[in-house]
Length: 500
Image (cartoon, rainbow, N blue to C red; front, side, top):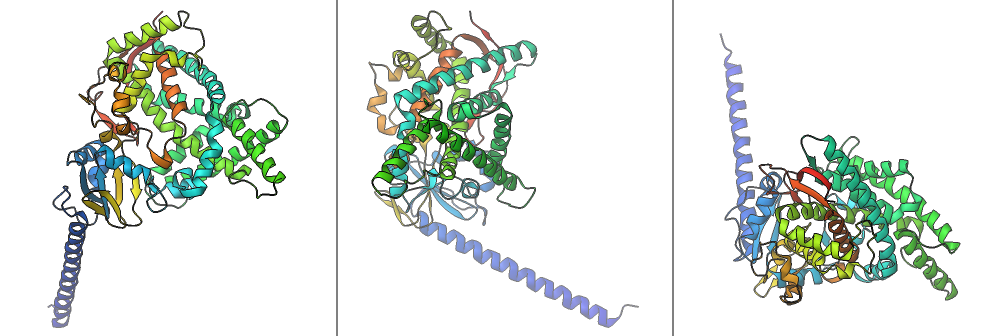
């Protein structure tokens, strides 16, 4: 027989649970309605989703299919809105307003890389700097990209590319399933960056340690923001600290070597020469030590350079292979130009020879226009920001210029891979110069753009001496984000061999 007391307690417990569930549902409903009204007040008349998923917004779509999500967002028009995990954002798909945001980047509207970026790279990362401190650092870094410096880098870059292409030839011979270029080009760029930036100071053992640490750093950047031992973010932070310690030791060695008036052999050397001169001038004038001149400070900035160079270059070189496979007529024109300029393919490429490669330059420029490695750039509005003539983004808005969209504004038949648009007759690089935002604009315009463009031209020049063919993969023409863009199949080649 069931006790009346127990029956009564069950009824009370059931009623209590129902009340609490009702309160929770009511609370969540009120919170959701409030969220939607907040978004309505922020977005004004901007196009975008009619309603968003409660609290999480469009994060699931963005993670599952980032290309479809962002490019679907661009199709709303010049300005559109959406939300991700409670963060309201405005995407800008026209060139003038996009450029205006880049040019107004400041402490009141800083760049935002990723939620994990400051923990991994520090608040004093060059991307997060603004104002006078940032301006002085950029001036101090100018000697790293003089014609003399770029000429030395070019020799190092060429050797690395030739060595890796020889490896790819052997890999292709041994493979029955083709070779995937994206990871191979990633490895090429890592070795090239290490050789250019710190070459004479790094051993083979240290090079492998750098690669492993850098891989963990990159994975940490895009891992869940959960920080405790064992998580990928924790491994990324430890990796960043390891890289900084190694770089600090290298800066110390470079300062010792350059103080003995040796010739610079890498990027760190050129920076150290300039820094030692600045330190000496400050002493003579009884002025404070220059900013970013200690071994530790220089190591942090060197890490920033390594991080910035890797993924963007890997994306561009992978798409260079992809597009030249798709357009054999364009590849033949590059080959013809290279044969005319270098009948002997073993002849080194110099900074004097690069300007003569007019068609190769056009292909490089079109590659960067059509396939910008970073398609968007996030900025945080710390005060109301006038995005266009008729819309002002409120405080807390993530303002996102679309580099992908801007690079297509004005250009005839913008989705066509057409290097001739940059020839002397059409001059679209002059007509639509303000729309080309692959390297950004304003105070954070990419310092290393000449180095990056030289790297792409050098790669295509040497690539033209090879025969290669795209393997037939179902997704070879689709694009994925990793986080820069790549062909979805990783750009698999059926074969890779010399053409002579």
